[in-house]
Length: 172
Image 1 (cartoon, rainbow, N blue to C red):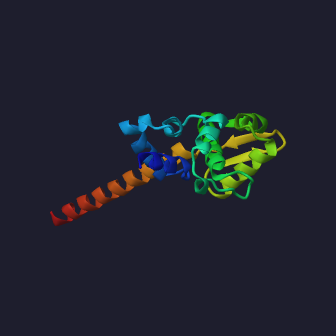
Image 2: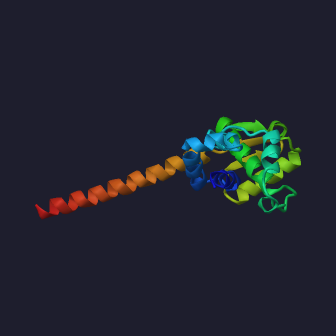
Image 3: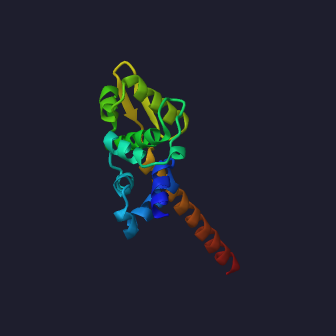
């Protein structure tokens, strides 16, 4: 069952829920013995996942776990490519489209299509300077969105404390 949870986590869409599940599974001592722990750990640690690792992972999946998508990639390839793009955005402010394509082992047009899909699905914030051939990652990617959530929680807690304080003062 734990191996199924690890596979499901790896195949799930990027986001806070996946991050939380990854952290729980990576910390579980039993998961370290599993075949796919390496990919899970790389996802948790925001490390680049190599195409060869994806192929090995993909071979171990059952037929119903691999779905061909509209962009001629299967769901496994798509999830890992998106992960690798997000990891790249955390390490670079900008990168040449050709360099990103080489890292992903895709053509420039394939990379650009994936980037456009990620933008339209609000998975990442970036712009592409076509003249210069540069991908410009905008601040506000994962780390900044996490900080925004924390900031909102702090503001809400501060507001509640202030309301409580004011009600105590009014009683005096």
